[in-house]
Image (cartoon, rainbow, N blue to C red; front, side, top):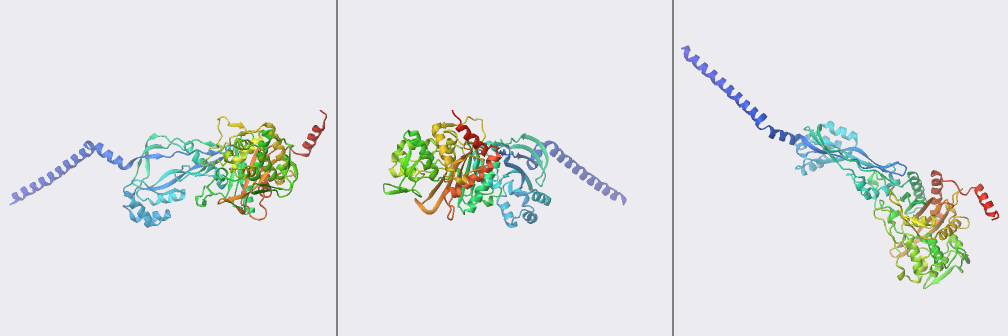
Length: 570
């Protein structure tokens, strides 16, 4: 009876052992298949899921002022991204992620769902370090940080119109950021890394290509003068309830733009402050009729024609004159005056008589050589060229009004460039915003004798005998011209709307700085250039001459020495 039981037990043991043996062989075969036969395939599949080539962001070049002070820098920041395929597998974690990113959970889910076929989707760009730490602490699968750069402008609104700004991808959108985007932009690098299931980089495998930083850009701007000009311009615009304003300072010796400011402005660090056309650089894009600030060039045309000398007389009585159906008037009857008085008192009648006495071609050529009617060549994006009609089409009334600044349009930078020619003995430089080793572009606008004569006239205009006394600076000789122009609106001159202007240079004995100030639509009883724009010039120039350590040329001791030298026998 026991033998059959023993046989059954042995049979069962054999079956079990055989089963174990077959299982072992199967496992062994599978291991050989995976580890040997399919190794390359499986390795590739693993790498495809965890080995990634990531971009190495390139640092955008800095923008520096002429003294090496930073005006625009790129700082490293993190951006939050996700792999929707992985993140959507854990919907229960989206609410916490949305809270940290200050997003609506439904919007976050929809954003991921709409891009489910992608492997990389930005959730929020340029987050603070604290937000980045909170995101990674959530350990949401498929969510990680990407290192990027954000542009920062230390001077904020003060230099906004010159520099412009970049977009979220650090590419120039306005101003010099746009004009020199290729120069400033670096070349991204690449490296191969291993990521974990959360999308975090756990190991660098190899560097494929190093990132190449962008090149730095050095401007001719002096931050100290930029701030000074901006402060005074903003104060004047606010004090007079004006619509806008612009100011430009040039180095009289070479045309370098030392300061260029506008109102209203915006903060490029906070794009939320950008409203309407506030990003426009009015100093190079806005066209204005220059009013009486053009009169020195009308005088230049007369002097260059050989028909007039500085001492030549003009009869302006009775303070008005008819030109066709139009009447040109002065604020009072100046009588018989010389050219210096015409400039210092700003006689429209005198300027009109000069313009009508000079050949139209002579007047046009003088204006054109001074840079009116064409771009300055500064290289600033969107620069306007101004408007100067061909002299063949001028009527007498146009010649007369052009003599005192109506019928042509200029930009503030063009006007500053033209006054730079007077300051530099008749030679005009192309304005320059970026420091360069390239040869200076310059050409002669008028003879040295004409320029010297104009300097004397403009210096009288900033004395108690002229309209620009409020532009004077104690201890320095200042030369300049006021201007007040009615605004052209919808093809006609608007009643009660004016432009207040002042253009000048200092020190007059050896000009170093040229400045133009324009206040657009000052409100109230004070709207003349001598009342509104001239004080801005005086305040800025007072500080600028000190900052640049330019010695005074009008101290009592210097005046006495100059008189003694003049009175000494030859």
